[in-house]
Image (cartoon, rainbow, N blue to C red; front, side, top):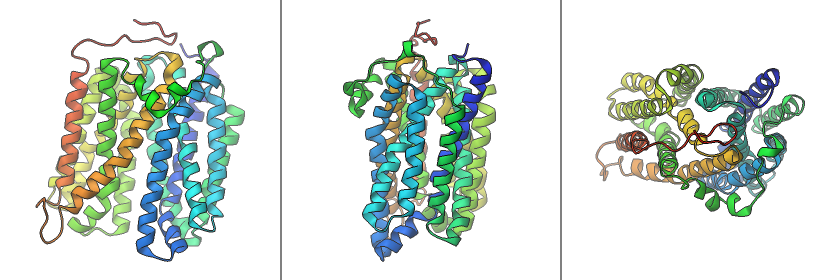
Length: 417
């Protein structure tokens, strides 16, 4: 049964989904204008490209460092205060960036954004608190759908506001984060009872200490590697998709933007509507493997597509990739105690941050040696073929992870079954 009474339970789930939507939307709003604002502050396109890469690395680096800390703080003090403080900090951060007079001020804003965005670890831990193990995949699917909706709506709103002013999207993002804070202040109940909290320890809260939790059981370690491979393959799109679409199919910026919106809508549908029924019928592990396998097939088909219509057709099987993320999260939460959910999500976020740093560099390099007059890799879709191999490997590892026996499943009182 849920930890909180039913009405509060429903209000808590609604808050988590609305907060996830508003947070991701606020991040997406600034995507269309941030590179242009950087260029305005530097006065040089080449310098702007360099600084934009630095800002991406700063954000991912802070996620790596701070996610375990914030997750452990939520294990100690509860989810509610950590989530609310992080959302308020995000609102302040967007105001800071809206007023930024120079690059250093903007860099400080990106650092703070990486810190405050680490509250997603507490959001996932909150969902684990209020849902029984058998329903967690559906809960994480709903969060994933909210993320997708935010990534669809955010850039579209940011693009419109950016036509008015480069600073307007930052003010809009600050307003959305402020609304999320006040909504949570009046609606959000605490999900972690005092008796289930764990004393804070820097040994567990530092990113390397938090990663030790993922080595606590062989199957948990295998799932952590599967999670890393999933994140690694996913960043293929942020690294090369825009360039690939233009070079191979001659698509314009608005066509690419429309396709990205379609990707978000498909992902929202899969995670929001398919995850629950499929898991109920097939179970977490089989659903995870199916999602990874379809993702691999879809990416491979994208890389081999000889024209744009075949590429678009490949997006539909690839959308079933959305079955994998919620089920990986669900399987992992069932293998740690209730007092360690925040630490687990912090460790997972750090894993994602490592992939977020390494993957764009790797796939960017692969794409760079796949084009030009004398490419080292003679096929322009090589990055997609490699991405498919990465996901295929994740599917095999995910399937083998449970073949040697399952780790004990933990109920909401931390009792093994």
